Image (cartoon, rainbow, N blue to C red; front, side, top):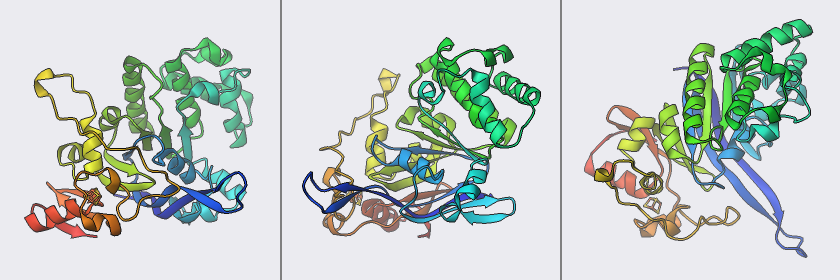
Length: 342
Ligand code: SF4
């Protein structure tokens, strides 16, 4: 498997004042030491409650937010480069490779521009000079997202939410990216439309050899589309595994609680809901040790003082990462799984 993107120790801290009159600064630690590899051609789901840092991480990869620390290494055809070190014009070129689809296409499409005008801009920027050629490309893109070519001369308000999201996807694909970050791309849509857009994303991925980072708070959606899933809590990744393994062999208590909250259609298979105690702590003052310890019913003494390291195991033949003292202890003592290193 070829690596497309590597995140090494990525942090994004936002300064905030400690109070109206105070000069002291504090920091919202939105992304707090993320290490991650994304392979060419995969869909990596990134999940967690709102405020866990997943959207900030997506925008940091795209350099819409500058990383406070760490490396974001992209594997370009002519070699690897750290996106955090690129100059503005170099990053503008790199953006041809990485595109983002937002949750609310209505606010990301200019209401006073026709669809042609909105989709034409990125094409012009990346060198498609002739209007005829741009109209041809945009017509083809609309057809690729199952819409009619003629729609390019209409305005955003003339479309439904699902259609606008298709237009948002067409725009992201217009300059042939390699990596598309879908940020809650189907969360605002009705369930029936969600399924259509998810299937469309899957088809387009195959046709255009895309790699996706699929950011969502919705664990029932992410399993369908993802090859692997990373779970974030308070700016950190706490578990990462093959999508099916994550659901079947869940190791981290936070992931277990998130999964227990997914509604099950079959009333004969009722599952116990794990209710998380307390609120998500402030990312300004994350707890000591394991960030999840104040809400974890398995909390041990060590959890309060020592942050668990991310460790890699082989679970039923699949690589599975988890950062939890208890999960590591159980696996290592029980000899359930073979350790693959740290
Ligand atoms: Fe719970 Fe401890 Fe594991 Fe954190 S390290 S999730 S507190 S058992």
